[in-house]
Image (tube, rainbow, N blue to C red; front, top):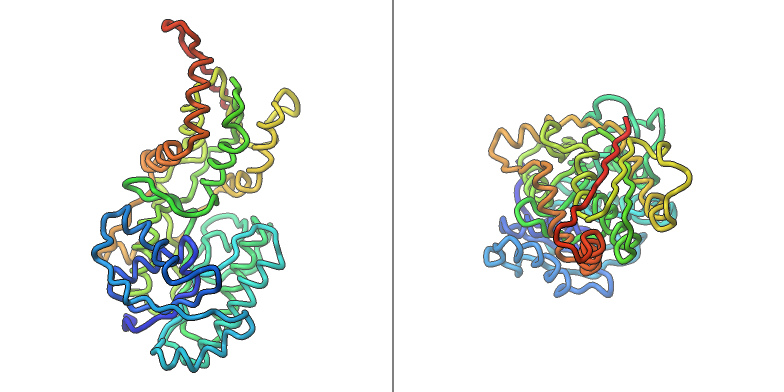
Amino acid sequence: MIEKNKALLIGATGYLGSLVAAGFLCQGRRLVTPLREPHTRASVIEKIKLDLLAEGIIDKVDFDLLETISLPPVNEVPNLSELLKDLGITEIIHCAGSVDYFDTEKLKEVNIDLTNSLIELGKRLDISRFVYLSTAFSSGFVDGLVHEMLHKIPPKADPTEYTRSKREAELLISNSGLPFLIIRPSIVIGDSRKGHYNGKAYGLYQFWAAFEKFICGHSRSVLHFIAPMVKLHMIHQDAFKAGFVAACNDLPNGSIVHLTSRHETLPTVAEVVKQWGSIWNVNEVHYYCHPSEVPPTGIDRRMKMWLDFTAVNNDIAAHPWQFQTAALDQLRSTGLKFRDVTIDTVRVCQDHFVAQSQRAQTFLKKNKEQLFGKSQNSEAKTLIRATS
């Protein structure tokens, strides 16, 4: 077990980093987080409070445990060593990262160059451990079980340049000589109990937000979705926070842990998509197992734009991912409370998203009026055509 001394937390301004900060502050852990303008200590605390307020546990946190310092340019980060020695830093928790799928320059700057600079900083500080927030998909497209070990270049391909850069960063850390812990979450979605989500539109939220942008506000009676019958690997943000903190507290150096829900509880992509498609008050809903099954003609322009925009995520979701979870199973066995994703908990997050969207509410109302008209006896006729 690692002694709970003061940690340098990189990335507290981001969605997952703020959840990590909230989790450690709830445990009374002292944190130092470097910031660049326009971020301030007050803005970081406000972001952390969003989650704590929604959970009703804000009174349990002492924000005096959080210190902030100025973050220099990437190549000057190692020069923070003397200041951080004086502050008593014993561990680096690296939660910063670019999640852009294809901006290779930005990915290199944040996911590779910053990681290298933090490794050098860690060596100067002689830290007890370097904790890295990666992704479960850093393996690339591989067949069979994705093991909790370092990955080689995948025989097929990487889903995106982002996943490749995370794998390369993992290797940099493992080869650095520093004690390390690598934590790989799958797709993070909102709180399992209330559905609140304060992150950007990535993963499942990209799917929902893109539908809101391209489809809502434009009345239509036919929808088309890609809905393969494979498990969609997700984790609720409350489970992510609990799992991350537990991994840092209880796993030995050199561990790699996949944070994802139990395979048997997870819904399939088809179940998630059909649950989404069922709420929109339209005449016809068409589901396809693969993009190649979508007819080349007969689909309106905005629907086609939406399918094109979500194509990369559809491609990732269609892969039959399977993750080893030995480390997570160990944490569960020693008391970790980790709520798995189910189709019902996805519905909680979906309902929260739709309730918060004015465009979605307007679209629902308009489609309902058009579908039922003035007659109270009219009935909607929905055709679900699932291809095999």
